[in-house]
Structure formats: C-alpha cells, structure tokens
Length: 216
Image 1 (tube, rainbow, N blue to C red):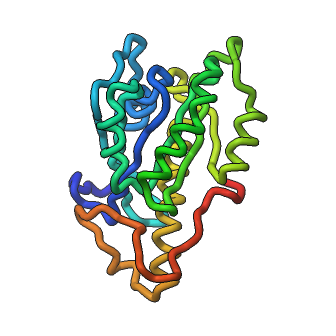
Image 2 (cartoon, rainbow, N blue to C red; image 1 turned 90 degrees about the horizontal axis):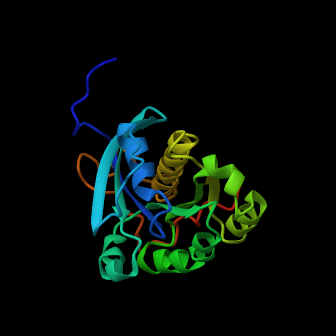
Image 3 (spheres, helix red, strand yellow; image 1 turned 120 degrees about the vertical axis):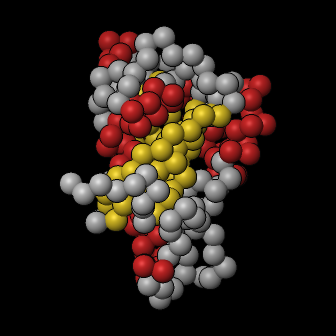
C-alpha cells in the first residue's frame, strides 16, 4: 500500500461524541483511533480529540473526533465544541437506564448547536454487559426511528461494532456532502479539502434533507 502523509486526505469531517459521563465515550474514541481500551479510564476533563483516516468510495476521509466531558459542570465547554460538527455519536450505557433517559436531552442540545443535516448515530455501548442489560434493543431502535437516527450497539471492551459505528457515520456524511455537491452542480473535486473542515451550511434551497430515517 502506498504511503500517504498524515495531512494527505480528500475530506476532513468533525465528529463529536456526546452523552452522560461514564458511558464509555473515551474508550470508544481510543478503540477506534488507536485500538486501545483502558479498564481504569478516568472521566474526561474538558475536551479531548483524536484523528483517524478511512477510505470511502476511493476518497481518503480524515475524521477529527471530539470527546467531551459528560458532567454538568463542563456544559459550557460542551456547548461550544459542537460548532462545526457534521456527525455525532450519541452514547448511552445499556446497563444504566438513566443514561438512556438522558439521551433525549443530549439530542436536543446537539440539534440546537449543529446544522440540520448532521448525521447522528445512537450508540448503546457496553454490550458486553448483556447480563446487566437495563435498556432493550427494541426500545433503542424505536427511539432512533422516531428521531431519524442511525442506531448500533457497541462494546469498546470487546471491540464490537466500534469500527462499524464510526465508519457508517463517516460514510453517511460523505454521501450527504456528495449529494449536496451534485444537487448544486458542483464538481466533487472542487469541494474544499486538504485541511478545510466540511460544513453543510448553505443558503441554497437544495441542501439535502436529513439522513437517518432510512435503513443503514
């Protein structure tokens, strides 16, 4: 495989992780970006981020993934960090029902601070705790369908579906960007790249409708 420098990519997408503290956002990030898992991971203070590149339809996509603290005292930071995000993983813990109950609040906050075309994946993390399950897959699927979200259960510990969750979000972002470029007659090759974050914001009426209501 030919070597590509770290800054050699076609698109840069900002993706955020959001949800209650302790649901495993940091371990999802470290599993995807470095294939690492920390059993004794500490709560995130403020904001951390990591990057990784993947290939989608022959294009090199660089994901800049932001992980925010879930604690209430850091809400001022999390509100600002949504800016410019075109994708999000909204995470809860399948063994803690309260974290699922709070998903609606996190979703409201996310939608208030991002563009209407943001691609959102509802993620039920810690599927390895199946013996302690407090949130049914059916309830989560119903919520995702009602809110037009993608949905997947993951385990950062067992590395189950972590790659799939991030890859699907990035692929859907790329498809939205591609459709928008085609709708307004742009050459995809002319879409900003090489260090410029993609934004959906547009004054033209052809901005594509939100994805996520159809099957993933």
